[in-house]
Image 1 (tube, rainbow, N blue to C red):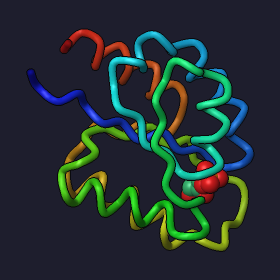
Image 2: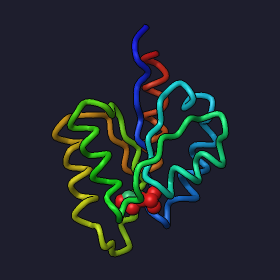
Image 3: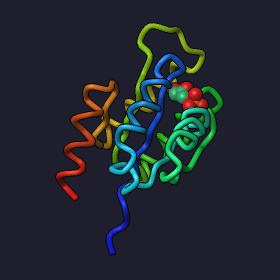
Image 4: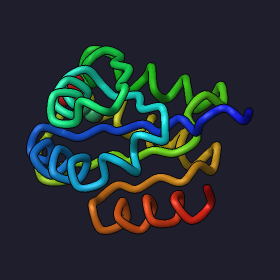
Length: 128
Ligand SMILES: O=C(CO)COP(=O)(O)O
């Protein structure tokens, strides 16, 4: 049996409500995938969506973005939904940039806002 696709779900603080709403709206669809998340995002998604199995790495500012970037480089994450906050300064801005850069380098489907994320989940569902 093919391994399920592993999808990264990440959201900055100002976008966490959006991520929880997105995950709730698509819970049954997302339950087909292995989910990996940064620490705080993953806790909120798991609490809101008990049917998902969410693997949590460290919080973004403590290295979580880099952990997920390494997983992309190793081929262990095949798609990413990352609700970034373009309006707030971040202490780990360089990590955010490095993560989205690796998403481009390895050419994985990567949605950085909700509008694109909606299209991405539709498309992933078509392919299954
Ligand atoms: O900072 C983040 C992404 O850059 C997200 O980290 P948390 O999910 O731990 O808040």
